[in-house]
Amino acid sequence: MPAATADCLVIGGGFAGLSTALHLAWSGAKVRVVERGRVGDGTSSRASGWICAQLRSPNPLLALVLESLAYYPAFLARLGTDCGYAVSGSTVAFDSPEQLASRRTIDAEMRKVPAYEGTRFLDARELRELEPAFAERMVGGAFYARDAQVDPRLLLEAMHRAAVACGATVHEGAEVTELVRDGAEWRATTAMGDFTAPQVVNASGAWAGAISDQTGFELAVMPVSGQLLVTRPHPGVLRSCVIYQPDPRFETTLACGIRPAVDGRLWMGTTYRAGTYDVSITTADTQAILGAVASVFPSLVGLEIEQAWAGVRPVPTDLLPVYGRVSSIDGYHIAVPIAGLAEAAIIGKVVAAGVMGGDAGHPEVSPDRLLEAD
Ligand SMILES: Cc1cc2nc3c(=O)[nH]c(=O)nc-3n(C[C@H](O)[C@H](O)[C@H](O)COP(=O)(O)OP(=O)(O)OC[C@H]3O[C@@H](n4cnc5c(N)ncnc54)[C@H](O)[C@@H]3O)c2cc1C
Figure (spheres, rainbow, N blue to C red):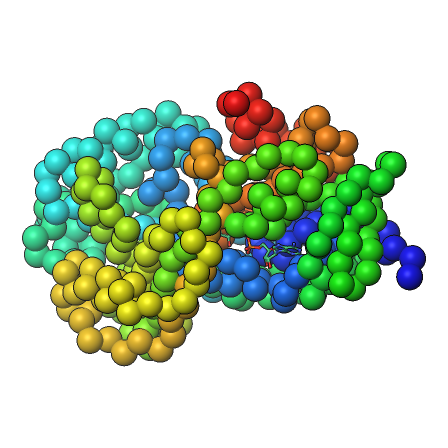
């Protein structure tokens, strides 16, 4: 069987791969996405739905998330559907003056990143007025009005549909078992046949290290699995996405966050299990989430849980995403996010610009920095 050809092959049908395929197709390139399962089968269908700048550190990821936040409305308009998008803001609560002070210091650093407008700090009364569900012991909070939310599954469907509509071909059930440079082309071997293209984008998420090994470029991506619970609809109990993070001086495997989706369901999570691809629903994680909700939002105890799932986050080991061309390997590009839903709009724009030979910008997250770090 002759190989199926394209201008660019994208390995992985999650947010990173679909966003890249969309931006390539919008630029007129012939693109094929090869996905080993179904679109979204990896991590993207497991996300919580936060497009959140407030909780980031003052680093290049914050700049990308801010760029993505600004671009999201135009991106969704181009997809032709809103996917449950809402600019609901995010509220962080603190239960000690030390936590509040530490957040003020971080926020001052974050303000040095262009486009970050600074959070609005709240005293205990203002926090309670904004979000009465927080426990009485909270001494204050911080509200960032520009943070947004979107339904991850609706977004995946819309991105998939739009990619196909604008000419990209998405091959599901096409696991890449071998990737080799063959003259001027990459050749990907899959159960559905071979695919060739002069350019390839590795957008295979938490599995990107294994694909990259075949190109000779070492890419260290740590899998961090985590669980989420979704309640039946309870409209009106929260206005914004709310979060409480235990004191950062203590080791924690949990941040207690709740996203009030536009349909009234509360998405509650999430846990962090580093170094594992295990996506089973565990009693320990369920109890950890429910225990945290009980202590931070006492009035939300006993809500009926409708769904639970877990996914595995790709986390490059220097805690920054990896976008763009590997300059030492012809036609090899990487698209590995960290906050993959928040970055879903921007990642493809940046990576596709590099594939098309333009200046992708953002050298601080380029794969080449990983070589410099060695
Ligand atoms: C519980 C949870 C909550 C989260 N909440 C949020 C959130 O609220 N906001 C946010 O910004 N981020 C969130 N994240 C993180 C976000 O989901 C990920 O960063 C994002 O989904 C990663 O997208 P991706 O396209 O890189 O990876 P994936 O979606 O995993 O896509 C990679 C694809 O590559 C495929 N693949 C792998 N190997 C091969 C191969 N050999 N051949 C072909 N295909 C292959 C996989 O099947 C997979 O579909 C959350 C993650 C978890 C687990």
